[in-house]
Image (cartoon, rainbow, N blue to C red; front, side, top):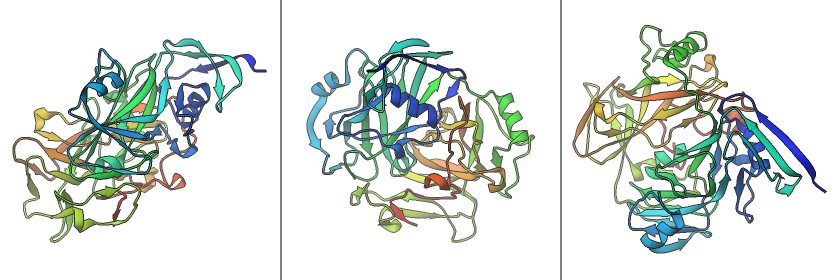
Amino acid sequence: MPDTLKEVQLRTKGILPVQKLHLLKELGIITSHEKYPIQDDQFQPNSIDLRLGEVAYRVRCSFLPENETVEEKVKRLKMYEVPITEGAVLEENCVYIIPLLESLNMPESNHTVQKGLFNGNEKFSEVKLGSVEPLSAKANPKSSTGRLDVFTRVITDYSHRFEEINPGYKGGLYLEVVPKSFSIKVKTSQRLNQLRVRHGFEVLSDQDLLRVHSADPLLFDEDLKPVSMEKIKVKQGLFMSVNLKGKKGEVIGYKAKKHNNFIDLDKIAHYAVNEFWEPIYAQPHDQLILEPEAFYIFASKERIRVPAHLACEMMAYDTGSGELRTHYAGFFDSGFGGSIDDKGARAVLEVRSHDVPFMIEDGQTMFSMQFEPNAERPEFVYGDEIESNYQGQDLKLGKHFRQ
């Protein structure tokens, strides 16, 4: 016999950490397909990995549903469907919609009562969830997805924006997948993207960023020293630049080769780099002209770390500063870059120049990092204890390549 009422209070605003994401799962706010229960290793310090469902729909074009459900839109645009339970290849430059195994039952307000489902079983007949502000969510590709030049975006019913899930949303999650440089072999339960849940929306101001950096350094220069308060650049985020400097013969980036074989996402440290990537060597003048629509991997000049009480997101590049897209993957978890003694890690940039050739130079500002507080300190942070793939990284391709 279930208990009558459980009351849960969210007292502090910010990104919900792993322990609160577990609570949302227990409350039935984050749910999954009954055949595929949510796994413990889906939970990251500030996010939960989302998994591919059982079928991929090849559609004629990308879309936003706005006035209808995603399923209704897919019915009109579908060319064919591909079962992926045993694996299937998604072709380069084709648009696919894949229903995800997870779905959401977001509270409509900051004081809501709903059925309690603790560990999939009814434990409380009602749960009263109280919060200062309503809960919302945002999705982003995982790092390995972006480094393969796989373009992904979450779509929800009746939405007019990609990746963003409003308070009160109740329904499925759908992933638009467009392999750009390489065809990819995907399979049910693989994880191409991730979801953060926000309690309110609290972004650190420029003054707050400067105060944090002065006491708990966020950014380190090439000499592994904290960037000075006089040199650090902030404007609605923390600006960083690209590294093109290196010794003669040193690789400072990679350019994707076209018309190659597919990449099986199940195969880790399997593929030879030179089969899929052309190395870019340091140039005499520390500059490079990007070819239109080619895909490049570079590293940041600075090294960044994310303290445990904060979460971070790499923000879209301002095209007023050049016709570039500088990233797909945006979330940086608490603990990325380690402690102050670890001196941070480089951010890896996924870069494409649109329409025209575009020159970039060493130290050119390329992107900004937006910091948000966590509602609570996560029970664990990014790093070796959870086998994080990119802790302490320099220039590094995705985990599918032998490096």
